[in-house]
Amino acid sequence: MNDELVFYTHPMSRGRIARWMLEEVGQPYRTEVLDFATTMKGPEYLAINPMGKVPAIRHGDTVVTESAAICAYLADAFPQAQLAPPPHSPLRGAYYRWLFFCAGPVEAAVTNQALGISVPEDRRRMVGYGSLAEVLDVLETAVAGEGYVAGDGFTAADVYVGSQLAWGMMFGTIEKRPAYQRYVQRLTSRPAAVRAQRIDDELGAAIQAGKAG
Image 1: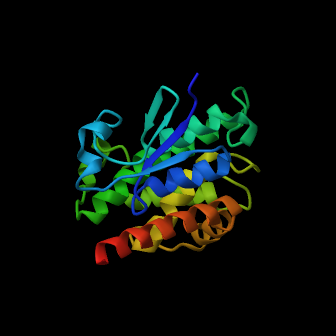
Image 2: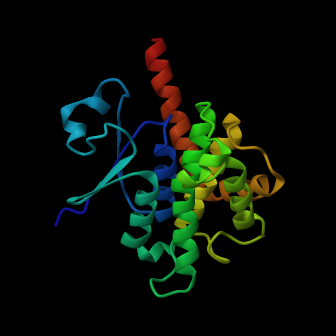
């Protein structure tokens, strides 16, 4: 059986989330770097992800897209990395909760704010996130302690939650609350996170140098 792990990405994309997760998993993988305007919209990649977006992974014959789904899949595909609570653990609920809270309400609320979309107060029941302020307050409760979002152990949910917070604070779409900053600092100092950032920074620099040349 072909169980090769292939990672489709661009260093200036949400692919950085999947890269970090892959480095945490610690399994060999091959990287395919795509260009936004050409190869990402070409027929070969559209057969992998018809949305024409990255990241995506192919593990043998299995294709997974969407950053949160990739994190969850890799955690289950490689249980030896211990990046998810065991299937019957009570912590599995918190793990799923915060992973998909960030993939759903947080992503939607932050994106709408960045686009200047304001939901009228009398229409908040129509949107899954209610308001950005509510979303950020709830998220703060998940990261305020010294542990992680699913108990005392680091999981794939922390990769995704931490990435959302780090990017949001970097680009000014999420306010820099002390609880967020402490949580992100703890996560991004992990060896796998440092490795992943270095790889993507070097790829990004090489792409820019190629364009300049």
